[in-house]
Length: 257
Length: 251
Image (cartoon, rainbow over all chains, first blue to last red; front, side, top):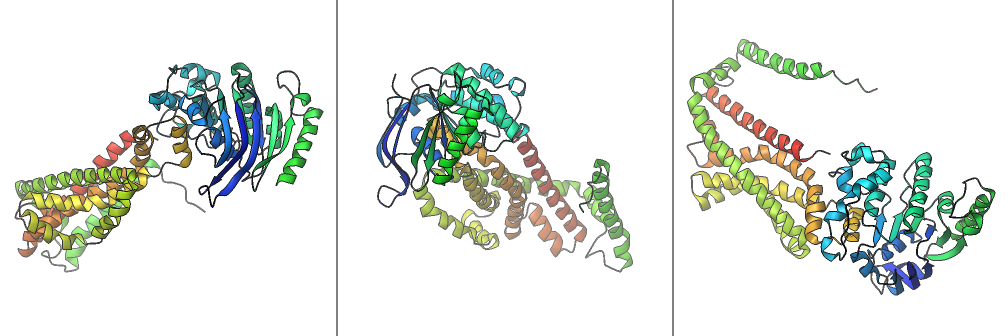
């Protein structure tokens, strides 16, 4: 099984190859298939940019990147990646059900496999069964992100990219969604890249946490969280080992900022 | 401190009372103040025209309604189509949008004689004037509306490998609808202004022609009745647009 992501000397920037502002510079990163990686870093360090390169929303300026052993473009057109944005990006004129079903009606021409309509099952799974006919403005922030996750999962992606998906939620809702995400990850085995700027969230979710520094973005800390956790990436937020790992991450993040 | 909102009953009753108080003042106060009836006729005199000359009013309402409606449909449709073309071709937009904006600065009253020179008398020039007057606000609003989807929304469709037409129907058009309807609401009033202005310049039929004739003949009650009818027509068209808007936009 190929690695989910293999990036070598990756340069990413804006403004063309010459006078480019580099956002990521010489980034090396390997992410094993099926793992859950938290990406932590200060604003402007290129966390979101990295996800956008993986999702084929942005071309790198230099270096190489392969996703699931292929080019990002191939993987995107096969619908093997799901993307969850910070603001849920639900279409306000579509009901919950129709938002979740959006991937079934769009971009079918480039698809080689048939995507099944698992919307009912996914809505139940995300606890949205009773809200199918609601419009996005009738939902709470947490419910909206659940819809966005269900939409990202409907194509059964092998790779789920999450760009600070719970950043705008209150702490209780965020903790609950963290647990739901972990349960989902255990069930599906999907590789997840989770961008956040919360140390606690990164440590609780990740099997591994990388810290990026800004100007230009690069990996300054790569922490394997498995020694701090029990079997299956399980832990309690207040476990002393997790608290110790968080202190370690905080030091790295402070240096990176 | 903000005042508490009115109850629903009061919200309806107060404007009705306000209108009634002004009508009563108009009816009884103005004659007392010595304002002659050929300048400001009383509400009952205007109402009398609706009773006596109903057929005349309806005969003149019909062409104005047809011209305004046809102009409204043609002008807005042309604006929407051109906006779609512009947002899909930045080159065309860069080349022609400034020219379109320049034409928009020509006052409609200055443009109308030219349109009548080109299209003669009859309904066509009035329809063209009404269409031109609807065209510009809708074009500008529609371009802005079609471009109003956020970066994340475009990225969402890109991740799904959506085609240009899927992005148009699934994202750009629904995003543009609220702005389209806000310009349609404006156009519902301006289309009627366009038709009436056209009738002023060269017509013997329509509410515009009736307004001109009544003015020159000092038939002020008839003039005021024509004004009431024009304004009712605007209100009716506006209400139709709002009703359609409420059905289309539910969020």
